[in-house]
Image (cartoon, rainbow, N blue to C red; front, side):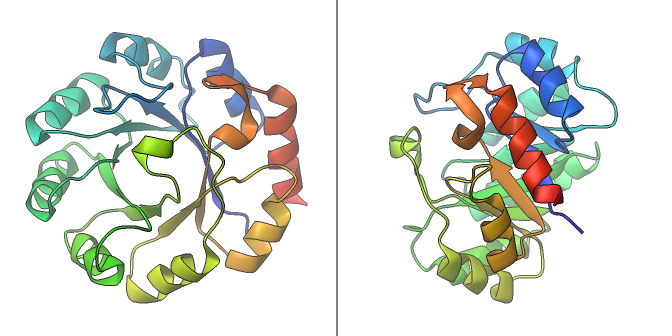
Length: 215
């Protein structure tokens, strides 16, 4: 069975429809992120895009910051998932898991390779009841650079926690078959690997990635 495919950094309505048409399972929208990244959007802009997502496709809001802000975003946008992509505390994540769970919104927590005591931190976050953990090889400071999959860390996290670990980092149509065969991820996260430029998805790349994944 192929992994769930999350395509992140959606910024255009035509890309919502195009990614859904080619079989993306989850579409990600960066909203009020507290660091300067090219994919950042206002809640108003994100709401227009999320309302255009077909019912067969899930939505994910990627954000960070004070938990009151994230609750406000979740209340307004009503995504299926909220990805906490900053330095959220264990207490805040546990609180959001509890509060947003009442609205059927699942929490994804991002960790980076430079996270201190990565294995213990991952276990602590997993224990809060998050839906999944995302291992992102790129930090907010180098978000536009080309990253790569860290197979060793990914495998370590898979063995350490019970919830899914989302695989990310430089995934493209050219390497997707090799990556999934090597790492056997349940979920993959793709962004720059299917773009023409930041926030502009390339239909040929999206179509090839989904096609190569299904082969």
